Image (cartoon, rainbow over all chains, first blue to last red; front, side, top):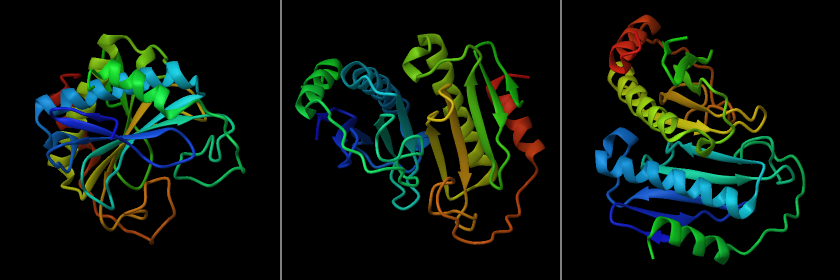
Length: 121
Length: 121
């Protein structure tokens, strides 16, 4: 858990690339099942997470997705993509393109920035 | 083109399932490269599109994604997913699960609802 807010929380998804997930504390199926206040919190968190990822990791691209087909609970994936990550330019769920050895700065540094930017400390 | 707004437009993506894409009129790379006004318009359009899709198609799930790894221009995919579509529960970019023959209501009916809900007529 990186950020434990009033309406949402943010946690790491274990992967080669930096990848976080945003959940509503109250389980919802779809984005429009969330309350206006929750949806505002989600959109704010997406914006702050992306900005912090771009600043900290200086990646090629940010990818964002909300599927939930296997587990119908609303959650938003935000993924930091690099030209030389194992799947780029395919999606992180796509066909593996190469064996990659990414050298990334520490997760802790990103967490500190995100906690400050989200004011979730 | 379904909806031609001041800051964004919405168009169909040709596919088996109902699938639309939201673009900013001014090309942007990332969501946070868009202006606050554009981002508000995007979040509003996502919400209205999803709500209209749920109402009109009564699907299993809505999927939302923003990648842009091949063409680094911000655009949001919104996909209507059915239990018996060709890829469910995989993502629409995933491994094909079956040969499907979806019986769907007319696109025109959805367009009329969306144009009214978005006030883009």
